[in-house]
Image: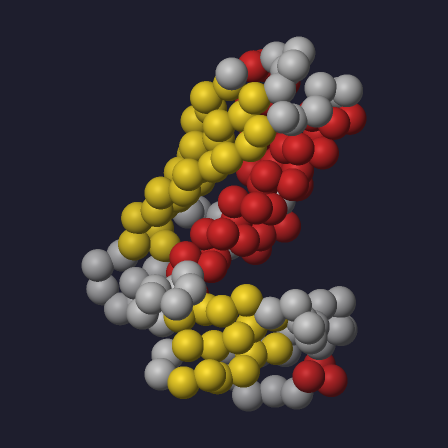
Length: 145
């Protein structure tokens, strides 16, 4: 199949399915049936498409990290993440760099294990990261309490 061309859904194995419904202006409801989120091109009523992409990247990494820490029997008590991204100046304004700043707390969690979990997620397990341009740098930092 040639990339970025007209085609048919029959040419794609349906491992994932989702949908989009326009609700006016540059606002859309997107997601699998019955579980949609609002995406707003103006970032007024919901995250923009690039912000949604960063949400997907960060939550994908977050799931991995939380699960890895649970497997070590050091469950997370609190988890927050700030995502900062840089965009290209020209069109398209693609995301060119991203930084994930993790803020995690929990009893018995060791910094070295959290950093290892983050590294494994970003470099090996995160499906969203692996789908993005491999030359796009994704960096991370950690506040552990």
